[in-house]
Length: 449
Image (cartoon, rainbow, N blue to C red; front, side):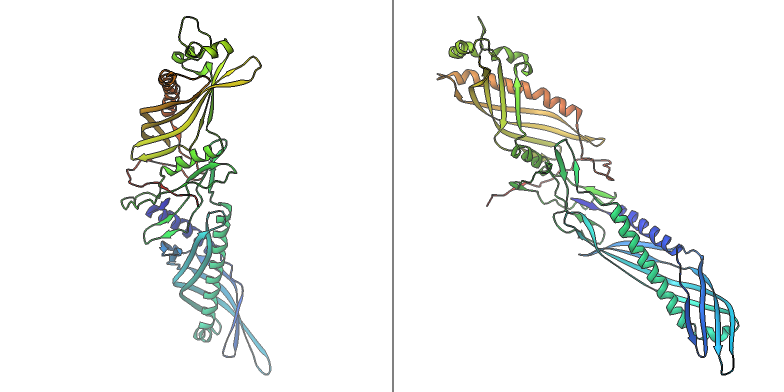
């Protein structure tokens, strides 16, 4: 979930004010004609001679979007006029100049914000209206008469200014929004992406607004239904000093593990060279005068003397992650298959065991990276099948497999925690002063129908 607060409104206000100011500066008002009594007048060469210094405010519109209010549009324009009057015998034409002053002119721009088909925040509608006073002063021949009927020209000039500034401001906002399409997916690894598309319409409150984003890691081009849903994130009222706050729950990591599991990415092959030194010797099928698989299972030693041994580990469920403040827990379940390579080059399974375990970490964030230290690693191994009747072999093998799994996983997790994991990099979004917050949210599990 993204929460945009006071600083965001100030920044967005300044952007909106800059757009409006530029459009006022580019004002090009076409010639205007009108009639006062028997005198017809044409106003031409209307141009801005004094650039106003407007002020602006940006506030949320409850259940709708945002409102930009631009005030103090006190500008001055100049123009020339040509007045003529027809009589029964001849036409009279006179010229002069005009001074146009705007007073208390305001523009209100309402942006209705929703979401598009891709889950991006989008401008559904833009409305613009204006108000204010226009004063027109004629200077020249017949100016007294023209000034008496200047309301005709004041109304037209005000309508043209408001229409032009509103139309061009809306066009420019739409153009910038199109050029800067807000991304909702970001690659976080070679085959994975972070999906933060909106799951429902934004919520607008008097001092902030919220975007409800998915916050899910998934395989690229992969579509799965998560067996759990993201938790409701509480409102932290004390968070009101920065431009935006991004809240991430353990749903993010759990979804990534689930995506990897469903797409069969949680499988590891370990050959003898990758095993820890204290376990490597045990995995041999031939070991005179020592303890190994070959001596524990004589049939294996005779059938596959000196054979290469390897291990295949794969998950049977998607690992789950629980983050509570600065503590994180990871639970996983899988199967360990020990295989040997026969003379024919084919691999033969000699033992299968279930593997489950939990890992507990302390977590901290620094420079946009998440670091963690392992507090406790608890694997559990149970032999479920072997090439021979084990006759109590499980009591011997299971502790050894437990030691092997712990010796294999612990260095890798320790190294990963020391190097840290980079927070997702999103275009035009930089994490600053990141902190981990205590919370009591829970990932709610759902049942497939």
